[in-house]
Amino acid sequence: MSKKNFLPFLVMAAILMALASCSGKLKPLSAQYIQADPQPLEVVGGQVPVTISIAYPAKWFKKNATLTITPVLRYPGGETWGTAYTFQGEKVRANNQVIPYGTGGNVTMKSSFKYKPEMKRSELYLTFDVKIGNKSSRLPDIKIADGVIATSALANAATANPAVGADKFQRIIKEAYDANILFLIQQAELRSNELSKGELKDWKDRVKKANDAANQNVSVEVSAYASPDGGLSLNESLAERREANTTRYLKGELNKRKIDVPVGAHYTAQDWEGFKELVSKSNLQDKDLVLRVLSMYSDPEQREREIKNISTVFRSLADEILPKLRRSRLTANIEIIGKSDEEISRLAQSNPKALNVEELLYAATLTTNDVDREAIYTKASELFPGDCRTWNNIGMQRYYAGDLRKAEELFNKSNSVQQNSAANINLGLLALTRGERDKAQQLIGGASDVAELGEALGMLYLEQGDYAKAVSSFGAAKTNNAALAQILTKDYSKASQTLNAVTRPDATTDYLKAIVSARTNDAAGVISHLKAAISKKKSLAREAANDLEFAKYAKDAAFTNLVR
Image (cartoon, rainbow, N blue to C red; front, side):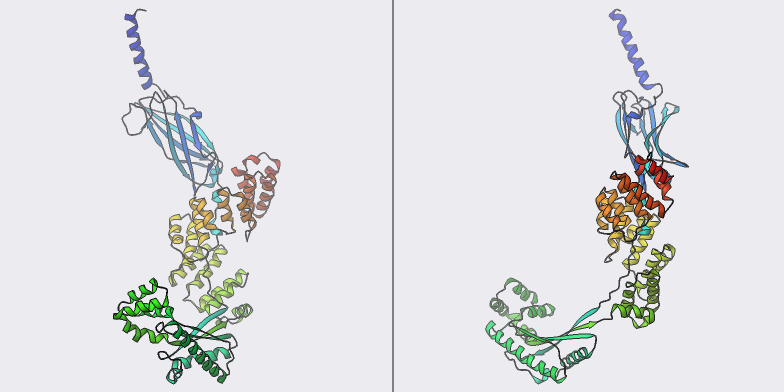
């Protein structure tokens, strides 16, 4: 062929190739160009998320084509559609992602499906809707994933430990009573006007009362001081004599009243701590300057010199502060011994009115019988209706009993008496049982100073799909939910330890043990734990049959016989 005839041929070939890239139909896309992650799918925070990667091959995407791809999860009894993505060729005038005809391109699609139990046995497909010019068509669907692992859906807020309105019962209550005997400057003699003060008389009466009481122990202490002015040597001698005179007087007074208690005594030469405390609480001019001197200098003599140099304030110190430091302080340390556990338990049954609210709430902790415990809390609510803890704790017992409607009513009653963290945590757990995560976040996130807060937060994070935070919040909790969080972070050794220590093991405990066995290739453990779980809850046989955690045992005779 001559060059003259060959040139038109090349032009015609180029035109035909261009037309081919624009016209015609899109061919079905091969599954080899598509990848779904994870594989199989997995429930996270009540959703089934998936990331789909597509590598469009070169010369596949027509320049005038528009393609809409939609993931759809199909399962027995229904299907759920995911997020649709639209792509376009180079000559389409629209705002979708462009796929070059010559080179093809890589795209990523993210979608999520609200989890339903039927999705365990499901298939994920992509649908392809094509538009070229005015013509629409549909390419064959492509299956890209099989099944959903739903282990995280075993989280159950209804089994979490609700927060208790804790008692403040103390077996031994320690109290301290003080009285001061003041001295004149540089003197250690006890003055009659100081010894006749009402303060001192009341103190001696309180010691006498404690000494005579069968349920109280008392000891007394003498602490003698000198004010910081006057030099260390002088003040040490002065404080020592004040202590000796006060101790002698006190022992005589105790003997007169036939009070036999231990007496301790000591003295402090220069009472800088007392000085600092009185200055801090005073209205003295330049008191901040005095306090700054105390912080700057530790040597007693230098402190004294620097303070005396502050002429504007020293006279006030001498008149208002220093006289109060020339003293002996009498301290009565009294221990009030409360009722024994046996006495509290007996009175809770026979005469609850003889107990205060702290003793009644404590009495409920002394029994392991749920009926008796709820009866004690109920009696506490009758005797002390203004204490929010009583209502919360009855609700806690209803929660344990599975009566969640009544529990919620009582938690709200507790909050109506006084807003409190225990009731809010428990209302948050109830919100989680209904899937109300935002409400639970608000209720639980705003709580504080409650022992069960960590477990409640762990439950919240577990439901939200933040498994690492859940593990951290659960801490050392020995519950099914804590073990589930450990399984989901692949800490199977820790999960096994937790499951073995669950206080009230149930069918779910055994089922979780079976999952740990499956993930650690312990076939015998899978069978034994599933057998225990199914014996407690027969419906778990069907669950196990559909659970992809046990997929590799589907053809095992022992497994199939068990879940049949």
